[in-house]
Image 1 (tube, one colour):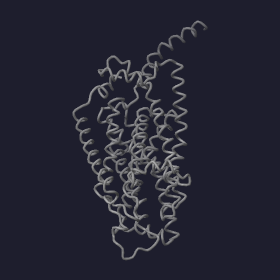
Image 2: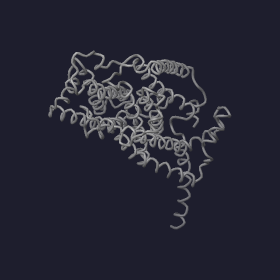
Image 3: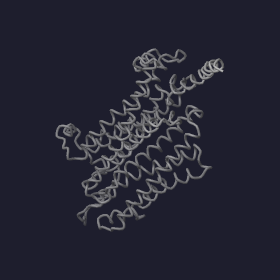
Length: 445
């Protein structure tokens, strides 16, 4: 526990600088939001045909990595994977932070915030968007409960650790959040059973909710969207992106807090293997999606594919998204010399960026391809270009995610200390247990 004490005892100067920069980005985003509320969507690049832009791409991205955090932490916990410990908490926090940020981008697509409550008052169950609202709400409640259950034991340790140099209000807060947990066998059993049950529930729930998100597109008669493959495609893409984000966070905390003994090379290697498998599956789905659309050559679908394959429009974006989301992770994981924290994190960073570009390509080219021909019209009516307000709000979403992690790490150690304390206790008790069992055996003989 003493190894982690500096993390929650004080805030370094560098951390304060980072917090200041992130807050500045958020303030700029608030200015952009104010302009959008006052002047409307005219300050964005969204128009009559391209009714969605960066905001919906960000929504898919953030809510996707949230789902990935939930399914990864839940799966590792249920199957009791030995190397899961320092990863489960990073993934669990990612689940909640991204789940709060993602839906905000949907709200930014709403032109009249004063009518937002109509979404609940006059909800239509025939709309997949309403399904998504109900699914995300249920999922968020479950994710918060799951993370809290995994924190209770640590809260109890923080509150009772006399050597921790923390304010008294913080110590009292820890004791209240621990809900009176003191490590009794029945408490341990109840907490373990509750956590495992919730983890089991979260795994299928994430798959169902991610599929509901894909149905918003798949049930719309648009080229590139109206496809039955979108369900599993979105699930795999979400998990792959989330794994990449978790790897980046692992490397960041390992470097920042010197956690080489806890976030070891083995953890990065195993996460690299997971990224390898998911990239291969994602590549297969991508190939199937575009192969079937290209082979059928339906006129409307062919127009979208032409934009994606043409280097005069989105060809370079399309090439970037496939090379860095599929090819690069596979190469890094396959070559033994590259299975190290640095190269794996490098591949993960570019993969995450490529997956965001893929979200953009899912939305924009389709909306720029109207069914009714648009001759002699203004370029801005059909083609989309994001404005600085949209980019500022996008940066605000990312800054908020980073800020949540920084603040969280000052209240809770990013590595679960309770698990490692249990390991040390077992090592101490093991010799005593062996000596006790050895005596009866000698007497019997």
